[in-house]
Length: 309
Image (cartoon, rainbow, N blue to C red; front, side, top):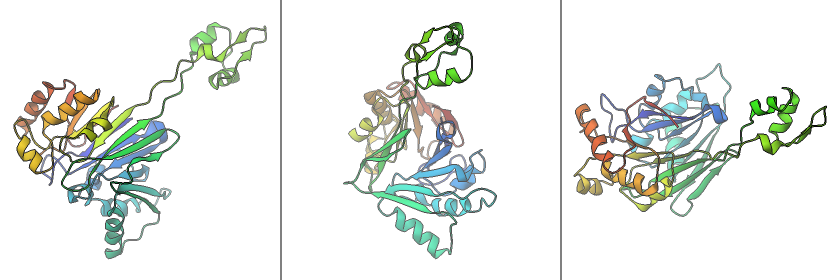
């Protein structure tokens, strides 16, 4: 499980940072990629990665500001050009209005897709659990921005315990079908009459990962709730230390406020994202240094960076 950042800038692209988009790569878990936001130029950034557009099965939009959605029509159209690959349907989750934006863009441009898009729109009254599969559950909650905006909490369901193969071998269990039965929780009896209890050779279930990905927001309690015990919290950091007033006026957060959210939520790691173009390369280390006084395990991400979870 990895997160790859396709755009880490705020508002408009710069030479160093494209606008908002990131990919949650779940290839080992479910052989899918989930995209969060799709700012202008996202598909160009994807060309610099190993991501195959057909693997993008779900797109989650935080809000309808252009720097988070203007790349959608282009990406959806280019995804249709994977002629040598099977065309697969795609789900888009986002605030009310995302369906109209996508369909209008495709209609006006005369674009026809060989796959279906399933839209899942929500408003302030229809948040909470928005998706549940056999391996993941996704929650959305409203944040505090200048327009309706949400954050997402992706929860991996508990993982099955692992089989202690070495102990089984030591117990005289021959490698083969019996291993599979024991892994499935079935007790077995060996040829010599030895009884093997499956529970004695399977570890306890392991807790799944929690990934919190927030849209643009002022510091708010909703951010903390979404990030409780998160393995990774991706939080915007449009402004820096001392910029609290301008951040509030524009519906954004500072690096210090993001660090406070991570600390209050008991998150394990904080990734600062959505960096204003006013910060030059030399300023990035200071953003991290200041935030680390509140929450130690913090990192300022950059375009195309890949973070293992």
